Structure formats: C-alpha cells, structure tokens
Length: 489
Image 1 (tube, one colour):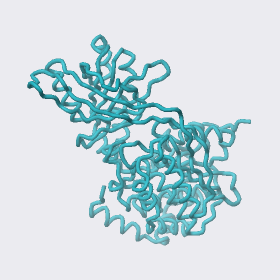
Image 2 (image 1 turned 180 degrees about the vertical axis):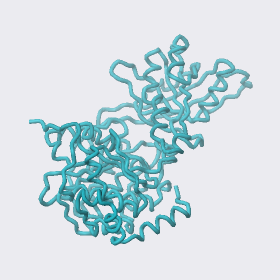
Image 3 (image 1 turned 135 degrees about the vertical axis):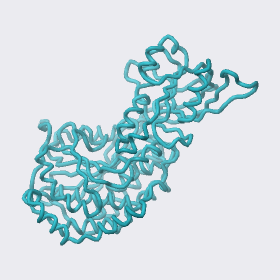
Image 4 (image 1 turned 45 degrees about the vertical axis):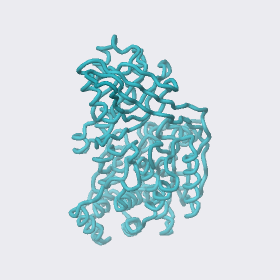
C-alpha cells in the first residue's frame, strides 16, 4: 500500500504548512472560529511530533514479529497483553488490566479434496484450499465425503431446500471489489459477509451436514479468508469453512455439469473459556479528570497470520497517541484512556466487560475512538454526534487539511465493535476514515503481515487521532449524548 509520487508530494507540501497558515485558515472560517478558540500551537506540536515519530510502527513491529497471531485463549493473546501493558508503563501511563473471560476455539486439521465430479479421469482428485470458520464444529477425525450443493443466494438456498439435507452447501457469492474501489469496502464486506455470518446456520437449519462459504475479500490469489460464523441458541453447529474464490468457482462450474463430491476434514475444538484482559492505560486529566476520552484498538487477531492490519495497526496507533502526549509533556483537562481490547474477533467480550463495568458512569465518558479499519492512507474522520457537535469540531478541519485528512463524515454509527455499546448508549464516537480499497484483500488471511503497513500511513493516522483526542480532551464545550444517557443508580 505505497503512496504514488503525487500523493507523497502532496503530503510533503501539506506537512509544510505552519501554525501561521492554520491560523490564517481559521481566520477565514468565521463559523469555525466562533465555535471555540483553538490552541493551534499545541495541536501543531502534536501533529509535528506524530509525523516524525516511529513509535507506533515500532510497537506494531514488536507485536507482529515477536508475538504474531493472537486469537483469544492462545499464548499469543496473553503475550500481547503483557507486551502492550509494559510498553504503556514504560512511557509513564497508569496501567490496569481488566479481567475478561474469552472464548477458546482452536483450529485443527483442515483439508478438502474433490473426489468425484463429471468426466473425472480415473485416479484424479483435486485439492480445495480452505480454512475453518471461527465457531465451526468438527467432522469425524477421518473426515466425511458428501455431495456439494452450490448456491448463489439465500433465496436459492431455500428454493433448493429439498436437495440440502445431508449434503455440503457451498455459498458462492463474490465480494464486490468494484464497490470497494469506489469507497464502499464496508458495504462490499457486508453484502458478501452475510453468507459467512449466517449462511452456515441457515444451511444447518435445512439439515446440511457442512457448509462452505466463498472467502469474503478481494485479490483472488487462492487465499482463504477466515472469520466468525454465528449459530444462535437453536441451531446445531456444523463443520463450516471458507474456501478460496478460485475453488468456489471451480466447484460451481463442475456442479453445473452434474453431481460433485468433496472429502472434507475439519477438526477444530471449542475449549472452556479462558482468562484474559483488556489493557487500560490512563493519562489522568487535570480539572476534568473524571471525564474520559477513549482512544483504542483491539489486541486479538485471527490465527492465520500476524494480524498487522487487523488490528495491530489500530492498537499501535492508540499507543502512539499516548506516546506523543507524554513526550511533549502535555496534561489534558480530561483523562485520556488508551484501551487494548480483547476478543473483538470472535465474541466481543472485552467491549462488553468494559461496558458492564462502566454502565453507571456513561456520562463520564466524553467520547470514544476506536481504530479498527486497517492501516490505509487516512482521509479524515467518521463520527457519531449531533449536528451541533459537528460545528464544535469544525475548527479541527484546517489542521486536518495540513496532513491531507480533510474529510468529515457524520454517521448514525461510528467507532468500531468494541465501543458499540458505548455508542448505542449515546457516547459520541469516532473512527478514522481510511483508504480501504485493498483492506479486504488481506483481512483475516495468511497475508495479514507487517509488510502490508506503510509507516507513513501509520504516522498520519497517529497525527490525526492525536489531534482529535487532544481537542476532545481539552475542549471547554460538552458534546451531546444521543440518545440521552441516564447513568444507572
């Protein structure tokens, strides 16, 4: 994900803007200037310190190259907790570990082979590349051999319900890279991801013996994309796996000519819940220390690779924000709280544990920020606030323009999965708006490795979120909680 020369030149020119230029821009924006006075000098210092620091990338390299995969319940996940907690202590943050009970699902053997299909030459079989989905149950140890029913929509699944019982269902639905290339990667993920999220459960309800889902993502290089699938309380889990786009298309082509049979072996285990932690690191505020601004990312990752973009980058950026403040000797009015969440990927229990522990203190949570959309070039911010609050944020725009991140998108929901309960309870929430055209090429795959992260992009994201975090932590105005938050007694 390298910048081209034009982007690099634009970035260098943007970074060359001085505080004088920012003040000039503010002077031309009477609405923004009237909203509240801005400590431009401090924000410019924060920006410049972030743009010249490799702290976040160094922490990411440490997390990915030394620890690697961090699925909850694993040794890697616990090593990440210890590593991040120590890193935050070393820069002078007040660190606590919040206990969280997390799922412990372990991937086993995963193989598949087409053993029969129309016009198959004698003695020929074909390997199918796949990986078990989180929450998958196991086949017998020796595997199972069954016919495959390929469908391309939920409607087709139900129309062919009579064919499904006792067979393997293949959901062959492509990820729409065209949507992603036009700024709608999340929408593309949601459209194709539906078949991973609920497809196996729908197949199980119809009596299927197993389910396969075409991998949700672009860049068809015969790489499987894992992820969680859900069952609900009334559905029997069945073996479920993601197959590569190429193998899904192969099975669809062959099945159009007649019955095909697959030998499938998946041996995952669901073990008893394990003990883990959210890492919470506070920079206490001054006169409004009881009010909290969260900046965060999640510590856990899937087990196929290093989890560099999902979400090593996000937690490293949050740590980078804290490091900038500490190095500059800044003391915010509100407490800045860095959180490394545990168990975003296959349960969300870290976010739930934090919410449950703080639901009587929601009004003290001034704002939450979560970065969980990779390490692409930052373009601006997404926020869930009122229109009046958007006006209060307007003075940041000229500063954001200096680093090429001018976009503001107000949405009903923002902030990431771990802060979702805070958001839906009215806490104003934020997340970075990033270039995600290639994000789902690597997301949840064996290719989610450190080399996919451009250090310059990471520095820019730290600069943007550090300015946002400081602005929120220091502003005299109050943001509006929507809907109205009532602290529990």
